[in-house]
Image 1 (cartoon, rainbow, N blue to C red):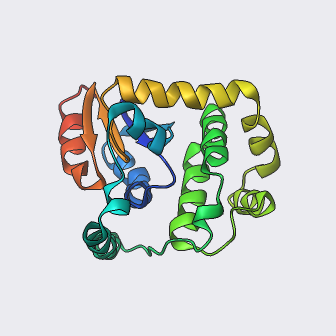
Image 2: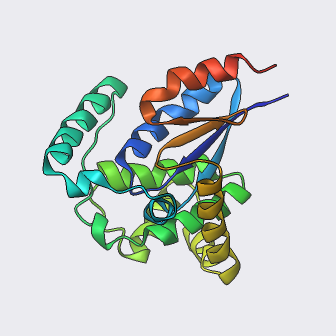
Length: 200
């Protein structure tokens, strides 16, 4: 039986970006499969009564910036918020992630976009730039975004967000292994222990 790591994420979360840089190798190390589960973080927070406190508290925001740098150094990756992040239609990117997952292409799709959003400068507020990033990752950016724009996929993303709330999620990144929830990129040790407790 294949061990499974459910990776619940939104592209707006820099800690989810950090987790995404580690997950492929982590999954191989633990003989596990990653199941990508995009959802809308701010909508989830509204559903469960959570708040984006780094926006509301300047001291926490200052700390988070330093903390992100520490984790990036530990992981050996760069981290720098894309200057165009506020103009990005992240719902469009999340819908595309649903389609990429359907096609078995979630890892390159998610890695390419997270890398650009949190360690790049391209204006992903422009659909043409999103397509270019996806094409560079070996994907068909036009088809992925076109399919993601359908009413059915819009509804799927809303349903995924509602389902995340019902399963106990309150933030991103979150991981579920064998029904057990773990929150934060700093919980991968616990994810590893949960995987080890499962039959191979």
